[in-house]
Length: 125
Image (cartoon, rainbow, N blue to C red; front, side, top):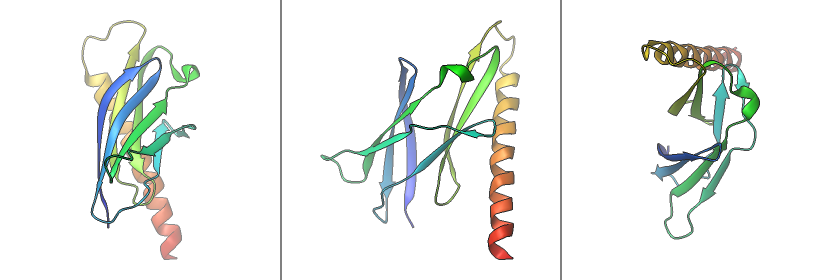
């Protein structure tokens, strides 16, 4: 089984960018990026030809998903369902505490766990 590590490099021009390192079994990783219950389209995972097992990840952030409050995006490995990273974008009025971002992240992770549990139940019956 491959071990995946995803590290953010920047957000620029509405695109989240990062580096994914795959150790162990060499695979072409596939990522899901979830906002609330919606899976984002257009996620790019491109292998670095100079470094085997290293991939550039680009996630376009749809502007229609940006509105007042905290918007959290969770990135996971499609094959295993493992959470690799997340990021939050805060818009509108400044928040006094980061607790809203934490609560939003917990909600996103709970949604991911529910989907994984339902998939597990379907596969084992």
